[in-house]
Length: 576
Image 1 (cartoon, rainbow, N blue to C red):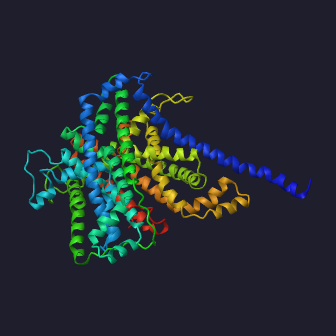
Image 2: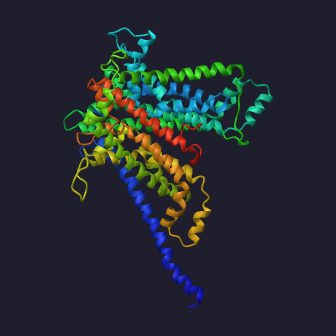
Image 3: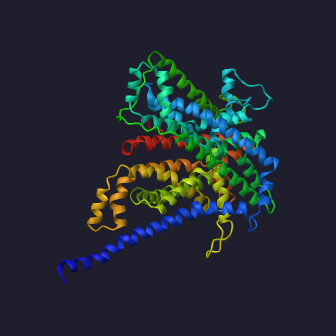
């Protein structure tokens, strides 16, 4: 045997291990994603179509054909469409101001504009309800109190549309801003040379070319509106304005052999509406080729004399939609009884003391949410690094299926994921012979499935900035797959992965869409606590819990912003 052949023979065992490690990691990723994201959705579809083991079209038609379901479906589509239109107008205007104009103070304005998206929707709804109630402390100070005894103006379809439109405007803003930033400055310069005004440039050139981002934002807003349990429940249930998502919630409390199959059918209908909305928005956004060539120099439109009035309107809008509701929430949390004016005689911190120290259910919900959120963020950070590696450098049909499954679990309303988890984990687990239904473990499984895509998107952004030659050099030097991931890849993508972990943490800590159906006496989380307290008449205590949630979100956002120089650009959505 020659010396070269002997060297080759000695190298073969060392080369076998990296290949095996990579294969086993890929198999583990497949089992995790398909087991937690795809399998529960298949179980949901199977239960909806064949509740007794065989397809039952008559049962499906019976449920979908009832007047109650028809009314809830129409209401769901109406509030989703109208709120999406409102979000499109507000979000596109905001993106145009920030991305194209010379408006001052953009960084702070963007932070404040994105903040409502980070605040749990049930907290936002509670703040708005208290701000515009007849006993509103803020309106009382301004001498604008509404007449007592009348119906609350937000307990209506218009109120739901208004809050959903405002809440989802940042989603449209983020999508449209990204599209506008990709357009080269030569477009404006050519139009200006031809004598076009800035208004004409905006509506005939810039916005048409940004249509893909506009329709993508519309799809995000539509999906968020359909699946936003917090706002629909806080406003729709008192108003007796049924939607599919509140109907599913109310079905959970019903009894009978058909309760689970009824929930499955309604959840499937909600999922179908979501997928149709996403598909339609994607088709509308890709009907024409709007790709353009040019330099990376961004567009720039000068506001001139209109800059100061526009800035005043922009900041006044934030005061009306953010500061006013949150001020009412804080004021309510500091009085002894709901509706009291904030004076030295009524001022108290007893609601905060009760929330933090005396209410065992709230304290238990906070600590349960905290460890669930930390566990979710840590597990998904590690998984997203491995999955992003394969998605970036080893794309295959199997990898694309895993990516699609993770995106589907995130795009579908959280309450649908909750129903799917109930159906999938209701029976004892194979071989283990115990059920995780009613425990914190089913909530953890739902979080892992629902937030994987959120962590993965940030990590993929980090991989896009890595030169693969470093990893290839380590492979040539004989480093195995796991060692390359530990020593080369993980340190390079750590900033982006950490940013994804922060976003997952903020999203999961105060989450309500997924956990509202999964909480039990043995597994309480913080997100649904607002709804339960408000339903129980403890408005001042609910306000205190809401303020604590907002404080946590603010601390996390400010902490992430302080370390933003170590993160890839664009990873934090509130960065300008």
